[in-house]
Each structure stands twice: as structure tokens, then as C-alpha cells.
Image (tube, rainbow, N blue to C red; front, side, top):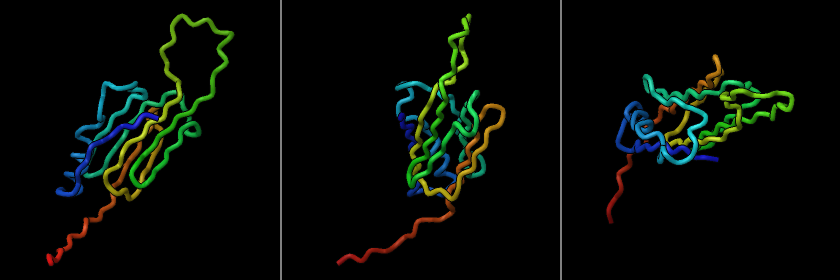
Length: 138
């Protein structure tokens, strides 16, 4: 599994600014490993969006897992029997993938759907502020 780290430091920011910071540096090392599947990550009105190219995959072949600090997306495709085909050109990627994104803010909920070969994932952050406490010095 390849981990895509998204840097985020929300301690000094409101939720909208924190999400902008969260997606400011999507990959910790963009030159490491494959970029498959191709992914767009953006925010709009304080909500985070991932759009992942999954042409050739059905919703039953994609699993999305959410833990406290990670969002994992796994695409698993059965091998096609291509013994009877003589390819002249073969560009359509239908290989398995397993990518994870570090979540640096609490998530209220996630929605996902496939539209025209694009997996659209909406990550809605929890709307809770961290409590500020005064610490007594002894």
C-alpha cells in the first residue's frame, strides 16, 4: 500500500483554512512510486473532495475504509482472460490499486459515488473546535 500524506496543521486555524492547508501539499514525495490511479484533490466551501479515475471498475470492485486518521481506497479487479486477443495497442489501465490518505482532522462523514468512470469522494470535516484550557502553573 502506498500512503499519500497530506500535510495539515489545524491547531492554529479555523476549519476552512485548515482544510486548505491540508490539501496544500498533497503528496509527501510526488516523485516516489506510481501516480496510478490519477487523482484530483480539492476543497470547496470547507469540504474536501477526491476525484479518482477508476475507468473499468465497478462499485463492487472498490472498497473505501475510514479509520480515525486514514482514508484507504482499494480497487481490486479480476484478471481478464486475454489469451484469445492479439493486442495492437493496450493503454487502458485496469490494474489493482491501494492508496491511503492521512487524515489530519476529524471527519463527520464521507460520501462516495462513481460517475462516468470517476470515483467522487466527499470528506466532510467534523465541525468541532478544540477546547482551550488554562493550565495552572505550580
